[in-house]
Amino acid sequence: MSDTLSRRALNRAMLDRQLLLRRSKMTALEAVEHLAGLQAQAPNPPYFALWTRLHGFRQEDLANLLLDKSVVRIALMRGTVHLVTPSDALAWRPIVQPLYDRSVTGNTQFGPDIKDLDHQEIARTARKLLSERPLSAAGLGAELTKQWEGVAPSSLVHVARALLPLVQVPPRGVWGKSGQPTYQTTGDWLGAEPDATPSPEAMFRRYLAAFGPASVQDAQAWAGITKLGDVAERLRPELRTFRDENGRELFDLEDAPRPDPDTPAPARLLGPFDQTVLSYADRTRVISDEHRKVVITQNGLVKGTILVDGSVKGFWEIKAAKKAASVVITPFERVPKRDLDTLESSAHRLLTWAHPNAETHTVQLAGRGVAGNLD
Image 1 (cartoon, helix red, strand yellow):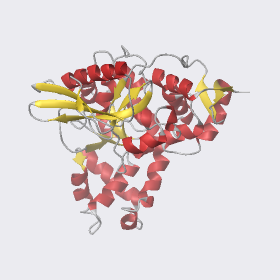
Image 2 (cartoon, rainbow, N blue to C red):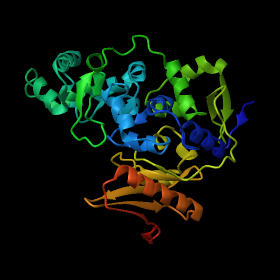
Image 3 (cartoon, one colour):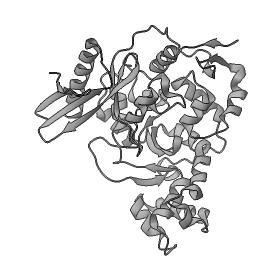
Image 4 (cartoon, one colour):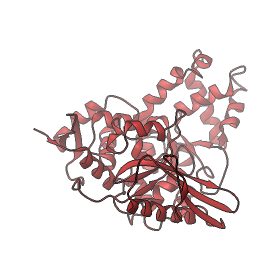
């Protein structure tokens, strides 16, 4: 009979593994690997993710890793861009490749335009073009249309993105730099191709290490692929099993930390697109279904959130002008004063870190029809 873990127990395990019970002294590189990568649909979310998790994190700590190729930005889990180590990029892209294969013709926007084309030939041509120099999507599309006249450039680029392991090369993702994504394959950027014999078992273990205990459905929601139940069964002899309050089976590493459910959890500011709210099929260990609909917009944007006692209880955003920067905190419900004080202090530190040249920094509280300064 498997032990039952309460929602609070699952929450504390997640917070511990996601470095949110206490700030870690890990390096930025160690944290990226420990966390099984970082969400990176936009350039800056990985920086906010590490700022809230690490002692003394500076923007250049991560920017330099991108510049020296110690980390890369690449489309991986769930069809979204992640920031990961090269070894994880090469190990995981083949495992999630079925997701990208399906998107070639299954995409309603591009599918009709490319259904009768030789997709592998498009990929081979794109690979050759990118081996000559990095190209933006617009640049790659313009080159590809020289061979496939009359086909929308965006449709041809869609095929290349799906079938090739494309890295978004710097300056994309470097703090303070701007510019559209520019691509090269892992072979050209890293000098290595994706693993020929990837291990879904190793990937499943890494997921559990960063997010467990978790169900097969949770792991599949994180990865964006199916059939991980077979992987879990192969690993079952070496894993621990539990049940959640609804009776769902959960898997975990034998020696992974599972803190006491009564462990205190400090109030936190989580950055936009933080993976804690995206990496489970059942996300109620960290956010209610009602609040999730507010935090994750219909067009897929994910707001920065506030954690109170380990759960999402509101969102925040930075508003910046030339000489002023502010953080506006919007709680969903009443928040204890001690937690508001912690969030206020964190918001001031965040402004000093993110907008050091602004002449004024303010923190405001909004919500439930009331707004005011926390200063």
